[in-house]
Length: 597
Image 1 (cartoon, one colour):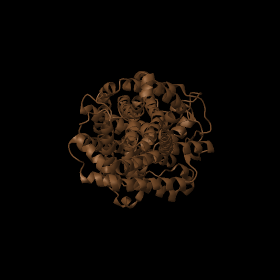
Image 2 (cartoon, rainbow, N blue to C red; image 1 turned 180 degrees about the vertical axis):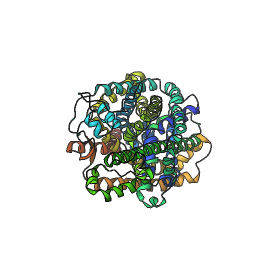
Image 3 (tube, one colour; image 1 turned 180 degrees about the horizontal axis):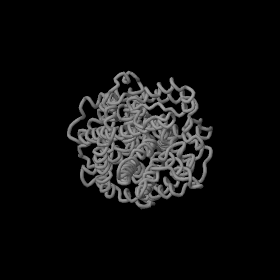
Image 4 (cartoon, helix red, strand yellow; image 1 turned 45 degrees about the vertical axis):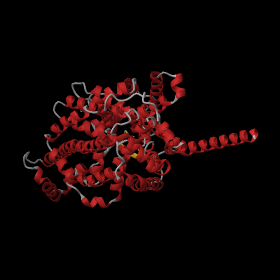
C-alpha cells in the first residue's frame, strides 16, 4: 500500500463528481437513445436495468475498492495484487491512450460548432450558393444543409479512407485548443481536477433540463416521447437487445480503463466507496434515461417537421401539376387524391411519379441514428428549425464540450497516475512536464484525425480500440481478484476500509455471474467479428450526397487487427517476462547458495 502522503481529494463530493463527470459522457447522449430506438423503445429499459444490477454496479464497486485499497494507478495496483497481473494495468493504460487520442477529436468538433454558433444565421441552416451565385452548391442540394456542413465544411471528407488528403487547419487548431484545455484541467492533479469537475459534472444537467423544457414544448415532441414510452416487448426476445444492454452498461461506466482505479487511489483509506459506487452507477443510468427524454422530444420534433414538410411538398406538386384549388388537398386526404389522380389521369401522373414520396411519421421515427450522426447532424438539423437557434446551438455544443472534457479527465488520469507512480519518471521529470509530454504526444497523434480521411480512422478507433480489449481486461480483473488474489483476502481489505465485509450478493456476482456474463459477451464479439466478413465503413459520396458502404483496404484491416490485440497482448507478455525474471532470480540464488556451501 502507498503511504498516506499521497495527494487526496479535498472531500468525498469531489471524488463522486469526478466519477460522474467521467462516467456520464457522450455515450449517454448519443448511444443509449439509439439503443432504445433499436430495441423496442421503453422496453429496452428492462434488460438495461437488469444488466446494471448484475454487471455494471458490482464491477464499478470492485474497481473503486481496488484503487482505494492499493492507492496506486492501474499498473501499480494490479502488480500489488499479483506480480504476474501487472500487464492488466499496462493494458488499461494502452486502451486509455487509444481513447484519449481519438476522443478529444470530438471536443475539437464541439469547439468548431460552438464557434460557428455565434453568427446571425447558423452556417448549417441553409445551403451555400455556388460560384455563379444563382444556384446552390450541388452537393448540398443532393444531401441537406446539415449534412453538407458536417461532411464538407467541417470534415472536408475524402471519398475513401485511401485518399488521405492534408490536415484541415480549422480542425487542427480546435484539437490543439482541446488539448490545451485538458492540460490546464489536469495540471495540478486532484487540486485542479477537483475544482473543474464541479462544473463539468453539473453544467450538462442544467443544459439538459433547459433542453427538456424547450423540447417538450416543440411541435411534435409528444410523438417522439410516445414512441419512446411505447414498449415493443417482442423485441426483448432478441438476444442482441440483452447483449447491447450489457455492453452499454460496461462501456458507459468506463470499466476496465483504469480511470476509476486512478480516481479511487486518491481517496482516504477509510472512505465509504461502497455507497459512492451505488450512487454514481445510478446517476449514470438515470442520466441515460433523462437524456433519452430530451433526445426523443427532439426526435419527435424533427420527425414531425420532416413528415409535414413531405406532405406540403406532395400537396404543392399535385396542385401545380393538375391545376387544383389550393385548399382542395388536405393532410388527411392526400392518399385518396393520389389514388384518384393516378386512376383518372394515368399519363399525366406518370410524369411526376418519380417525385411522389411516401410520407410516413412512423418511418421518420424509426430512422435510428447514433454517434456523430446524432450529435452533429440530427441535433443541428433540429436546432436550425427552432426559434433563437443560435442560443440553443451554444447551449447544446457547450454541453457536449463539458461531457467530452469530463470524460477526458478520466482518460488522462488513467494514463498519468501510473506514470506519476513510477519512481524513475518522477525522479527525472516534474509533474507538469510529464503531463505536458503526454498531452503533446496524444495531440500530435490525434492530428491524423483532422486529415480529409480522418473521420474514417476515427470510426475505426471508436469501433475497435476499446470494445473487445475492454471485455478482456474486465474479465482478467475479475479472475485476478476472485481467484488469484483471493476473494476472502479481498473481503478483509474491504472490511478494513469501510468497516464491514461486502454483502453475499456482491461476492456471488464477482465470483460466478460476472465472469460467465463477460465470457458470453467475449464469445459473441469474436463470433460477430469472424462472421461479419471483411470490415466495412460508410464513405461519403459527394456526387450522390449520401454515404455508401465500402470495404476497408488491407492496411486499414491491419490497423484494426493491431487495435484489437495490442492492449490484450500486454497481459500474457508481462506475465511471461515476470516468470522469466523469477526463474533467473531463482537460478542466481541457487548458484550463490551452491557456491557458499
